[in-house]
Length: 101
Image 1 (cartoon, one colour):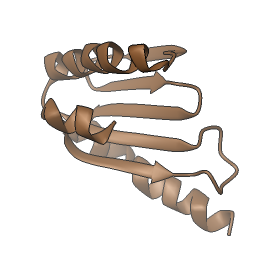
Image 2: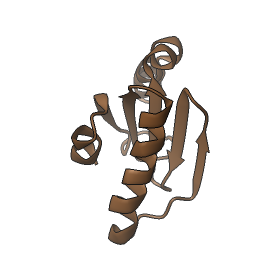
Image 3: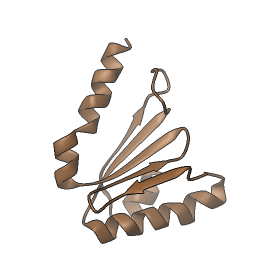
C-alpha cells in the first residue's frame, strides 16, 4: 500500500500497526496530499490497484481536505498538509497505544 501511494507522489506516508490494540481497525495509513485533485487521483488509483487484490472499499468519505477510506481492517486517511497538522492523527493513535499498554 505504501508503494502505491508513494508511486503517485503522496507525501509523509505513515502506516500505524494497531493489531495488538483495542481499536476498530488493525492498521491506519495516513498520507499527505498535494491538493484536492491529487487526493481524488490517489483514491481512484487505490481502487484500481486494490480491488483486483480482493480489497473491498466499504465506505469512502471525502472532501477537498480529507478522504477517509474504510477497507474493513484498514483505514486510509488522505489529508491536506493543513488538515494533517490540525488533527494530528498520529498523536491521537500514539496516545491510544499508551492507554492500552
